[in-house]
Length: 477
Image (tube, rainbow, N blue to C red; front, side):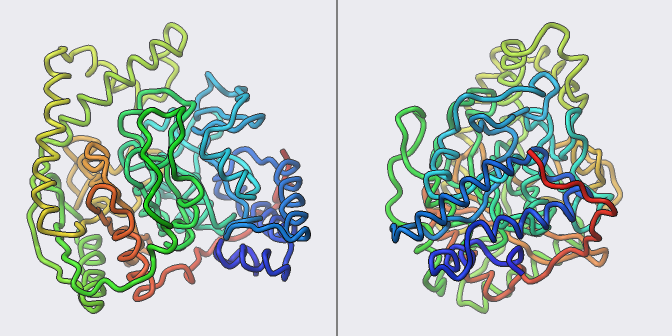
């Protein structure tokens, strides 16, 4: 079935004129009609616009134009990212009817590459929690177990890809918002190097830590999507120069001799035995491929202080700037609960948090002088119950803070590439994610290692058991 094919497979079929982009789109729309009412992953569909783009993609192929590997393959955009003429709510009732007049840079690039924009995926309000639920659209469900969360804040994107409603989704990651949903939904999620993909026009609290990136069923699909989105743009003063080569090409090659560090936690919190067992079993695949895996013990125990001190004041400033008076009573309670912490912070504490970021980097820089990659669980637990900010307990014990179960956010502070790959399933059928962290600017090594791991321990053939909706609503705008 077309909806089960990878993005690169679909792109090749379209280029060879063995299938039309319009046929691919209709197959995916049929899948959306069947399962999205159950999952609520895609919250705004642009059927008319996607069909027009698919027809244009087919016309370009008929004319014999040179097209890229993802030409004609549909993509979704997270509802935090601006789409010209297509509603962008940020998951907030304050913006329930907002329609941007400009595309985000990455959306411009995906459209130019011939990817029809299928629609927008669900996100928590302003991306501020590790669950995906908001007052505008409600909750997104995990395709593997609908009582559980798909993670957040790119939970709609990860659930969409896991359920076969299109092979490609854009997400963004300001503390784990690509990697956590990828782990919860059993797909591949990549946080590239900070600045690799320009971030514009949204100027908000996440700007200091956010990484735009792909969510896909395969490493190569994600790499091909990164090739489209990456590269400098003068509108983003923080973006990087052009990458040295193709990220898709970087997936080739062996990892024999690669030096890999393994740590079961980042030096804080605990990890559930089922998660640790899946991740440690995955280590053997890297060893079988010729990599050298060594146990290390990280000490990133001050990362939460640094993260909270750098992000919460920005959130408060953003809300004060953009939202009407009395907003604290109307925004997501999980986010509102953090606001008193900001009021209690001193300017000195905020500056100390900024200094702490550099101390954190010093420790990781020393590690990466010895190792090419760091491996650790993406999070301490499998997917938590729907409706929670994030996991509330580890091994049956309440967590100390909401960030304790999440092993992702330290690498937003350092800005280096990181990804979550599917490492297996618990006995209860929930996916587990293994996190790969690379040196600064070195997505190439990360992608090569992830691609070899995917070949050794494939995951894309496994699909959640999703009953179709009893009375699926037809695909509409």
